[in-house]
Length: 357
Image 1 (tube, one colour):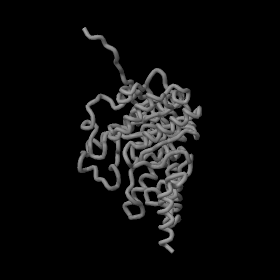
Image 2: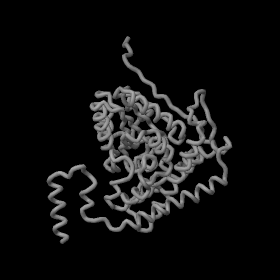
Image 3: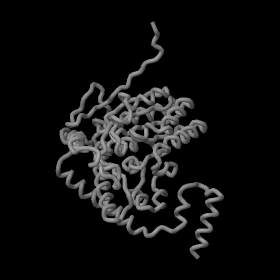
Image 4: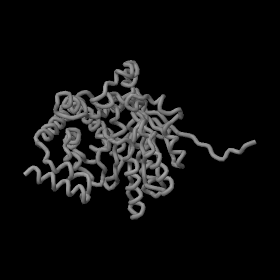
């Protein structure tokens, strides 16, 4: 008879159900930290209103192609709010909530999607990476940052994120291997929103979970209800704590749903039916958290109305700042990628400025 030399399991975590009820024997402290929950809820609402406004700007010719974050608010704010300033974030292209939590301004996001390279010179930690549209390359950037922190003996953590489709890219799998081989302070988050543009999760991979890809690299790996802010934040805090303590990397699969088109250049009605989307709306994160806060006596419609007005005022102010920035100078296409411009690009920059004269 053969001997079993390895086996694995993937644990799934949910503390807040879609109808707003807390479940489980060991509820994270965040569930009763109402000041923090209200703070996160307010910012999730503002992020959603910003997202809606950005789409309107694109539809009216005031913004370029834009990737919506609709439905991802809990995952993103859980990631960003769990990190320290000195940690490093390597995003994809729609993790605005995480970036807002780290000090990036709404106008910075608009500048980027408006085609202005000054948007990449964003507010917040300068050691964070800029938006990354090439799929999964940011995972190896984060692994490199994590290796630097380890070599320097710094108690810092790198966090990166990839989608369900991106988790099939070699860059992601190589980052897992590097994190395992070098015992890196790295957290790899798979935001499983069920769609890799037009390819459903069911056609991407036959594995039961995407989290188990981390197991293949020897990393602790879990699956979490990504529409449950409490569970998502708890998982992030735990993984970051392990990494900071020198105990290595973790893979977290966050289950959510992309409620929007992939980008404003996409029409999701061509490949998914409305019934599926309607079901997903019943599990979305904002209503879930609001139900919990209302049930606990920590929120009401008067506060909701005031929040929406305040949030829209902030969003409109960000739009005004974006629109007032003006046309970017030619040299901006060179100025926000490298700390020190490589020799060949420095020559190109000089020639370009000479041709303007």
